[in-house]
Amino acid sequence: MPSIGRGFPEEWRHSDFQPLRTLFSNLRYVAGYTVFVYNHCQGIAIQSTGTLTDRRNAIQHRLLSMPAHPYESCVRPVYQLYESIRLAAQMYSLLCVYPYPPGPAPFAELANRLRKELSSLDLAAITDKESKLLLWILFMGSIMVLGTPDSHYFVSALSAVVRSLQLESWQDAKAILTTFLWLDMTNDIDGRDVWDEISPSHHSGSTVFSSPSPSLGTSVDVTIHTLSRSSAETDELPAVEKPLSRSE
Image 1 (cartoon, helix red, strand yellow):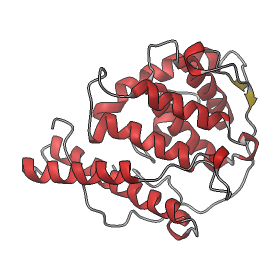
Image 2 (cartoon, one colour):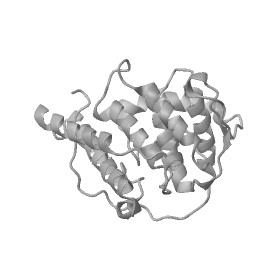
Image 3 (tube, rainbow, N blue to C red):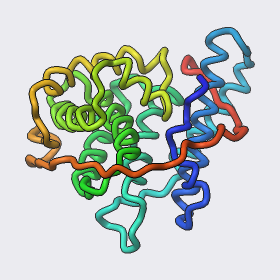
Image 4 (cartoon, rainbow, N blue to C red):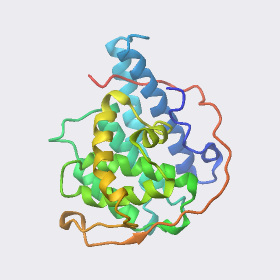
């Protein structure tokens, strides 16, 4: 898994906004944990149950301890995708770090909070590089509500981002997703199902974010525009504590 975590900008490590630095650090820990789990499940590096549990709990604690900073309510301007990334990371945790069965897991609640956060953003300021990050965020949200009426908003939003990035296949999308946080054995089936829902909208010519689902709120239409900005690729992942098994 050579590319996991590399999509998160290295410059966040040196941000003057402390929560963003913490977010970057925690995302790298989760990336390391994902590699740890993958290797364990593949029999490459078998770990004891105690080691797996301790690392899983540490990662989960880090994610849940990050402060919320909704973009719309911040007095000080904050990196606008911070809260969306924080919520998406919690979603990934429920799927791959500290997995919950669908019943008690707050999938719909997290998806609703993410939708509200995305609806408050200035999407006209999203850069090409951030569009890739937005793709991952929206895939996480889509998986949370897959197969429910609430998925319409995320499918519509994803269709716009897919067109912006000129993605033509699931393989194209997955190549981007795996640079953020993605574990094949738990995410691929759901991810492909999401892509299959996107495809008809992707080819229909729709160009807006839409959220007509009554349970998620009133209708919102936001056209996506992206700005082309060059940026250096992130450096190699730093050494991080690597976390635990999904089967725990």
